[in-house]
Length: 560
Image 1 (cartoon, rainbow, N blue to C red):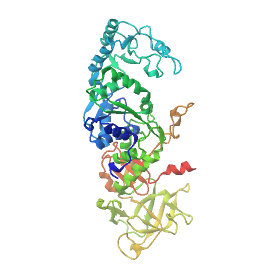
Image 2 (cartoon, rainbow, N blue to C red):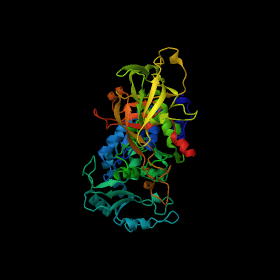
Image 3 (tube, rainbow, N blue to C red):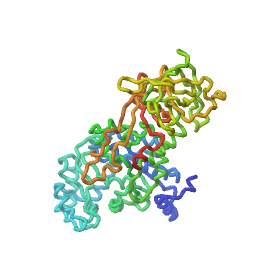
Image 4 (cartoon, rainbow, N blue to C red):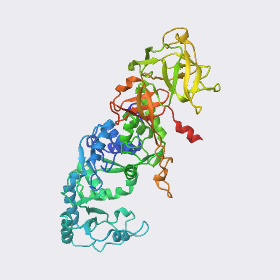
């Protein structure tokens, strides 16, 4: 389906309506404005896709702007991670901007508001100001400092800027309306004192602008036409417009703020503060831990940019917050990897099998198709020998007719190899099966064209030659939280729902050509799922992360 034939979402309708009302198309400009205080998560992917998607749809520039107004929490590490994530998702920004680029302009405008009597310095405590705010049903009371003279305000604001006051002692407030029904309009803070080094401006400034003062003015400076935010900023729109009113020039583009719903993902959290807590407390190893819903975590786990873009397109843009089942995200990566991931063989819970009638010391290299979904993927050679591993669950001494894998006296086909028959098995002193003895039909080799090779048997197993097997560490991941919405319980902390079994580390045995696998390579272990080479891998030790299973195992659990 082409972009033109897809139904428009309500955000696109807003843009189309503006164009229909003679807004010049060449003045369209969008932006993605993350705060660099953490890594981007799957919720940000929707905003990225929305804004950059609009840029592509209307052939309009999109700025990547970092709203870096809080030096206490922002770091260059986060800036670098955000740029990497946006690029990896397949998007290009027009210009890279920072709110800190505008600190001087924002300060100059603040001086202008003070001179116009629309801003004042308040030296009350935060508790006193909070008490004066009032309630949603009762008006606030004015600060005793509200009517200071312009000269006194200018002098105090200059002292704030020069670092003459301690943190928390003085703020600059906009003078709006302490009786407004919108509590955000009750003389909001524009500047606070912070004696902290900024990741770009170092110690040039001792005062830092608040988000509400910065965001809309930054949009205006950049001549952004449409500023799209999540729903929690709906009440901020009135303040956004009030601040613009103070500096707006009718000869320039006036930004328009509109809001869309945040998309929450089940069995996880998407608050940067909560994600940071998971890292700080050691629940996960890092921001890019494959259990994290961060874009870097999903990348490390083996997700593809295409699967994440398809996910954001599928869930679309809405006007109400809702919870999206993580299985929909898993479906998208499973669907894409099915098309592009090479098929290989790996055994994760090994059981030794010996073909008693196969010549000792002999080996042969068999043809194996790389991807039946992609003819251009070609084939590879896999080694076969007398002794190999299969999965423990693929053998039973006795089983009913519905068990189509290996059992005593019955036959199965080995993928790309021969038909074998289980004759006997060996157990340890505890009664655990440690080896299965089989015979094979030497004329039944797959693809040989013989009558025996065309014989139908119901089960097909994957396997790995023991002599040639490559050992690997395999990390199996489960949902990070046991509850589908862990941060919505009033009487419990989200940490109470952390899944203690979200990571299992095991040893696997893989076919030998995977020794050459590179970090980030994605494959399908046949019959087991999709896996990705982790950055922890080295020439001495392969590490694979499980991306997703071949089918949704959680659906069955949910049914039960």
